[in-house]
Length: 296
Image 1 (cartoon, rainbow, N blue to C red):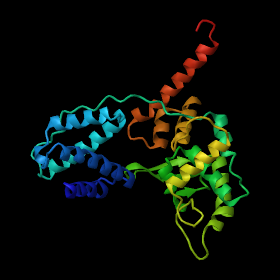
Image 2: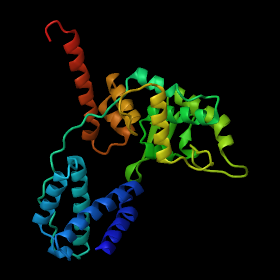
Image 3: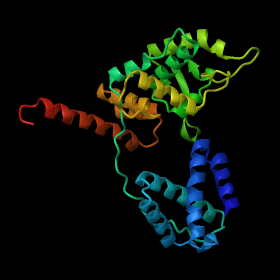
């Protein structure tokens, strides 16, 4: 079974162009699934039934796994079984007709504009790491990029003269996102003042944001940077890697941006994913109405 999983993941990487992070998640999902199948005494993939898959999903629910995670695991299982059927390793796909668990719409946590300003103000632009960190925070908020996309940015992806950057997102899809004046200024200062000092002598790197060793900064390090500055800014909300991304989308829609444009900048393939931010606006309007209307 393990060899078939490896073949499937190679197919996703080479032919479907899925990112390393997505493939790593699918590997974990399939490992969890196959461990359950093995524990049930099923030694051949051809013996897996629809009932076994339903049992797996129910077992995941009983363990407290969220509907979102269960749906993602079901998606991995479906793709895996369809791959096996297409390769004629299996005659039937047992995942057919299995419905995804209903997803509970969870509104993402966002920062207010004042909280964003306080967060970005924390790094010291006169310090080489502070200068880099200010550029990172400005870029994340100006573009709504994912943290994983920001760490993979190359110098050539950024055109400060035109005011745009080119981002490679999920599925190796490319999108172009505008940069605001503040982000342009912070990146320019970082390139002139900080980045040359982070590079080791006689070395070069194509990546835009570097760590102290002169190599591409990691997702974990960038995430720690955000948490540290949020604590310094005395922000009491739960901060997650995508908090600035969620704030970016919410603030644009609050100020009248159209949903399609926000979808394009976020790199969502389905506009229903972007529509969750409209719920945030509705909740905010409800709270304002309740607070100020004479007959709430």
